[in-house]
Image 1 (cartoon, rainbow, N blue to C red):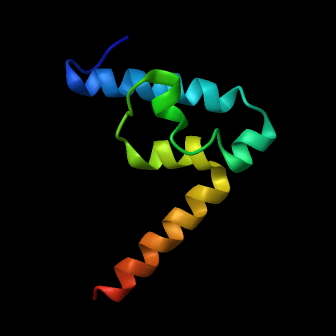
Image 2: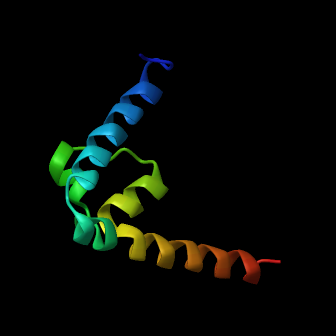
Length: 78
């Protein structure tokens, strides 16, 4: 069932495709991801929902590093 229309729904459909590939990859894929820029390779376009892209392409470890970097940068700004 679709709750959104237009560009938002298109991005959510891309996320669903990317998530399907990520979830089907096994524990090594969950930990390390599909590979950098793999969403562009798989679908020909990026979903541009950054946390999902980082998780699927770089895994849980990559998302943790990304979140740590953002937290550090946020702390430096104040």
